[in-house]
Image (cartoon, rainbow over all chains, first blue to last red; front, top):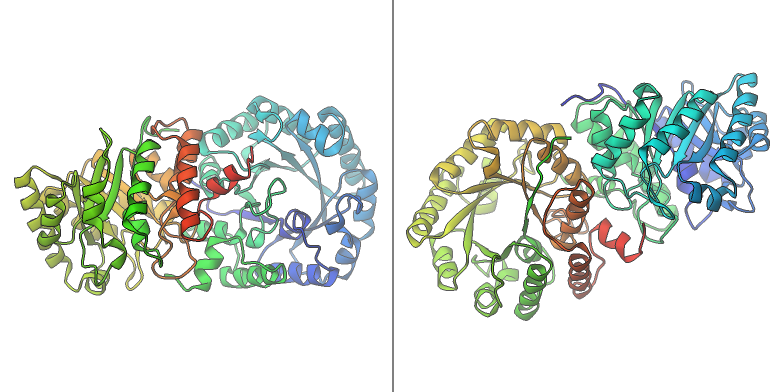
Length: 301
Length: 301
């Protein structure tokens, strides 16, 4: 099977994960989570977001997180920023990198950020310009790359267009998000084929939600096309923003188990990661949304 | 992506599923479950087992199930039989087909059936001979085709050997079971490659447990090699016999969603199937162990 020898995992639990939890987590616990994830071997951690706390109260305290965090060498601590103001706040607390976001769906963009795709690209461009001046790298997220809760199936050409725009604006990597988790392997492959017509495969990442349980199958399809950067969330933190109880981000533990089984390098200590996942899940009052975490806890071999 | 145009699903919920549930289900409910599965489009249903009710009380009443069941045309109602005595009971109630089982692990065979692999093949041979005389087709299961709870990793050559023996004895199809659910796509592909050196791919089925969440990724790998028969269990019935709370058989709903997304024919009505899964899960006092069932219930699109 033709897959990359090595994969880089982007841990989004402290941001995309906690942002979608009902229960807000205090700053000290967030810092502990991030430090534990770094200790487990994660080399890239999205540690917070500089968004309006009125809309996203879970991300309040991100400045304190970045300020108080004991940083490990060789770990990238990234911040999500929606606009120039957010970027300035991230810069002030020395975020290693920032991430901007767009969606491939016009309706989703309107509902989520109250602007058009074109306007959201302009907002991203302003951040990218400022970041470039400041010598900060920018990662670009695209939501709804397979399906949209409002528009249904999304044309791969539309994803390719938005990805190319973000890449040309200066994002060094584009993370392609199946926000609703409706994707299946052929649709994912077709989307990746379209996007990689414009952008080298080694500049692409995949970001799957496991709402319909398809995330690992989709990751396998992406690996087979040469994608070597995978976003995931410890313990599947986050749930689904569209329905209480449904799965959210694919669990980092489940991805690591897949990679281990396939002999793909990733640098992460699975038992330590699973222990971190159990700890943060217990604080949220539930079991980890990771089958690997549950099976390891039960010592199933 | 090179995958089969059409897949046959083998529904094992009423047998492999219910057999591993803590709570025994009454005969009337089992019959209702099987009839609902047939109505949802399942063409092959493992409806019961003729095993010792002292060891497997959940399968007591299998004779009544077969006798009282309203049979749909074109649906195969199969029975698992461990030996000649079990076969005679299955024959007496007009099971459409029977299934025999072996394991690719010597230690598992000893612990599970108190005999060697060789002896288990002889027991299977006796059933196959009797069934052939009676004009009944026999399906062969092999457990532990990737890993074993006692031996760890299993050599693909050992799986290939047991599969070839069962096939040569007269099984028309060999179902390869990752009983513990530890398999990942490359290991599964290597195992399938070894087995299909001896047996045509169209005589092979895969039977995955989702203990480590890898089942759909493994099914994708199997489809890519041309496997076109998949065992699954409605609502993921069964759990894991090795640990309370852990996942068992891959959920039929999740497999159907994968196949739908990939445009692979299967003949099953997903909403009707999911409704059956919710009904039987409610009787067992829990939510369906199927992310698709949960996402559909929440109407996530």
